[in-house]
Amino acid sequence: METIIREGTPKTPYVRLDGENGLVEIKGRSIPENSVEFYKPIIDWLEKFGDEPAEETGVNIQLEYFNTSSSKCILDIFKRLELIHKKGNRVEINWYYEEDDEDMFEAGEDYQSIINIPFKMIEMEE
Amino acid sequence: MGFELKNWYTEKKQGEVVLEYNGSITSELISEALDSIENSLNLKNEKNRVRKKVYNVFVECLQNLYHHVDYPPLTAPVEQESNFGIIILSKDGTFYRISTGNFVKKEKLNYIKDRIDQVNSLSDEEVRMLYRDILSNEEFSDKGGGGLGMLDIVRKTGNKLEYYFYEFDDEYIFFSLDVYIS
Image (tube, rainbow over all chains, first blue to last red; front, side):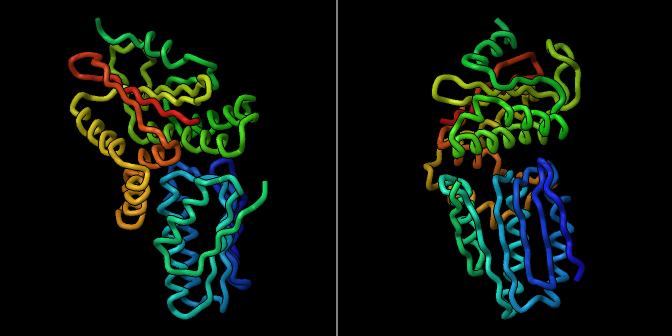
């Protein structure tokens, strides 16, 4: 599978999708006006990856903040991963948040409550 | 007395103005405005928690305008630009206040009012539950918001939305929204 790397911009996060190593990383901020357009290639990649997933997939989400239009797209990513997990492949989500960032912590809790995948909340010191 | 935009400005600019803008709300403008508030000393000196909250809520307010605003009425004392909106971020005492203003057709008044009143009527816990419910169940429109914007603002700020509708003429009202972050 093709590895996709996208550098971050002031409105969009750094993204790394590495099928061979079973790694999905999204870092930075996600506040594009048109989130669907930004996330579509990522969702498409995950769909293909789902046909032949790695034995283990590590997912690192380390967002500074994101807008509400991104929130649904992030959920779509998790739903794709949930399908992979349901088929018996190991998937683990690491949700990073800064120690005093209650908003990002709660956002992680939101997803954790909706998605059925092992979900680790990881506090980062400032 | 009719509505005076000048007076509205004066009221919203109380305190230290971090950013003020009126005109077309475009994607480029949102990037520039965010860049500008990120460089403001007021915010740089804030705790991480407050700073991020202000950025996040500020972007949500601007994108809310971006998705909904239209041309101002021809007689309005502003530039005739598409997607016309106003945003002011001020630090007023211990609060940051984000004020937005835009002209809307009268027939939209009830819709906006009902939406805000509903969000304002909820407890913190109800806001959280409704947010999760919409996030997990509802299809989003192309505009992407799916009604989460206002909820998100209330959730992050922990404060009710303050709004005013000023009659501008027979056809238009001026919709003013204030959000407080402390």
